Image 1 (spheres, rainbow, N blue to C red):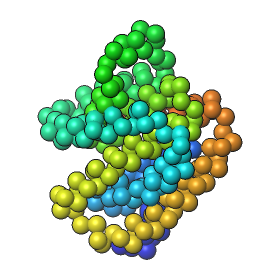
Image 2: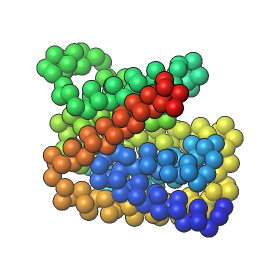
Image 3: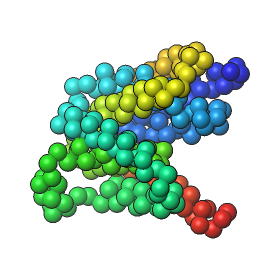
Image 4: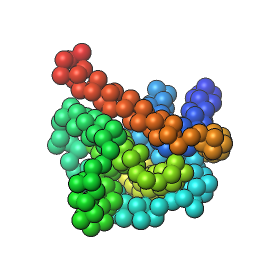
Length: 248
């Protein structure tokens, strides 16, 4: 691995860890997109979950007492089912249609506050976050990034610390499941141990810095930051749809 890559990837993980803590999301997407410019996609996808793993564990440790386990516990088995479904359906669904639907869903859940009717309907669904886990992981598997769960959390009644903690805990398990799956499928992590170790150190550092900034960030600005990041991701999906349809 070139020295420049060995330096840049840990730096990317530092920035990703910072934004994941400060905004509750975005770090994993940033790391995935940036490392894909330095390494083959066939390496980036299985490596991404391992590179950000230490930062996720650090966030869980930092905000452990703020985790809403009533959300996290049912989400975990749902994410397993979503990963299995996503793997089977990935090759059958047109990418353009999927990107359009995902962008619409993200903007809806991000900017439309839940109505009393929606809350009453959700209350009648047994273990609703199990199904959120299925949907989020399914979308993550077939599109590369879910973000559905974060768009729901921004309108929750949890404080900013609770949002960061619950997102970190649920997505930590997702990263573990995916990484173990790639390992079982035969991906060799051994050649990348050095960059993984450096990325863990920098990811932890970025996470610690992000917490310091989060402590002074007002709650309303925190929620606005999440909405801006999700909206930017949705607009990128609409751009992708337009390029595919126009042949640009």
